[in-house]
Amino acid sequence: MSESTHEQLLAKLQKMTFSYFMHETSRSNGLVLDRTEPTSPSSIAATGLALAAYPVGVEHGFLSRSDAVARILTCLRFFWNSHQGQEKDATGYKGFYYHFLDMQTGRRVWKCELSSIDTTFLIAGMLTAAAYFTQDNADENEIRTLATQLFERIDWQWMLNGGTTASLGWKPESGFITYRWEGYSEALLLYILGLGSPTHPLPDDSYSAWTSSYKWKKIYGTEFLYSGPLFTHQLSHIWLDLDGIQDDYMRHKHSDYFQNSRDATHIQREYATRNPMQFTGYGKDCWGLTASDGPGRSKAKVDGIERHFYGYVGRGVPFGPDDGTIAPWAVVASLPFAPEIVLPAIEHFDGLALMDQNPYGFKTAFNQTFPEKNNPVGWISAGHCGLNQGPIVLMIENYRTRMIWSLMRNCPYVVSGLRRAGFTGGWL
Image (cartoon, rainbow, N blue to C red):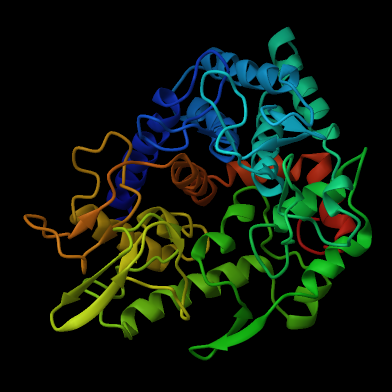
């Protein structure tokens, strides 16, 4: 496929995927639907991704600047005015927000946790909007003011719960979640924003305590900072341009986090090419294991092999779990790291008709091993998920124009956080 044809495919995919945020967002409070199911609540992470995506939409004419401003202000005003407290049905507490909120009331649902990482993605989206909408008028001034106030309200120190690393979250019924952010993951952005806070910052030793829990492995001849699911190598990179800058850990390893994500992407492809469990469809252009929906927990004998299938689970390479489920969005989100292998994979997914009759681009996941009558692609997820849509829009844009990275380079909180974490070199 030629370069111009690839560009046309990326433009089509980005526009279709962005339309999720146009149609699955409440115009009364700015909250974004977690997934396209009738009873789905809002996900604050999906809402943050929408806030980051609106500037991309403006640049490409998917919506007007005034419409984007109105949507963003509705959302920021909602979060600023929403109830913060220890009540079980509050919207947030200590500047953090509950993972899932009712689409109408904006209150907590499902006894979910006050989420440190999902609040991170929400606030990152707010800061993206503040970095883009810089005109000197009342509405855009308010965007910048509210985003700053919402960021400064977060009490990152409280989320340490007396320890050195951040907790995954808190519940009013039971207090802090036992588990903390340990091992390399998408929490990189959490630590950078927490360190960059001008009001309640994380202490310096929280970052070194986190990196001390990393696992460096050698897989298929490549040494890299290990984490199995592909999304863990991508989500922080939506906002952080880590190409050529290093913290102490990566200086010691003579690498950087951008190169590490590139290595992780190539290892995913190598795993699918080797296909050790002999799943249908896997190959050099069909790969991408991450946290995603699946066919559902079940067993079936397929071509003489007993297979175990799962629902939503964090699939990873090379140690599993793996049930033959591929998530196209996770491949697209690696586009800036390894376009030479991602573009052919996107072309392959398009050839499987995974965008046909889907208003929002690629479906969330598919599994060609799972027996499904009258469907040559096997099982295909029923709907779309906001957490998957955002990385497609934003990482296509970082590949094409580096837009989100450029905006965040000018965010003083990001720069301060990176420097406090010990990053030097490159654009810093």
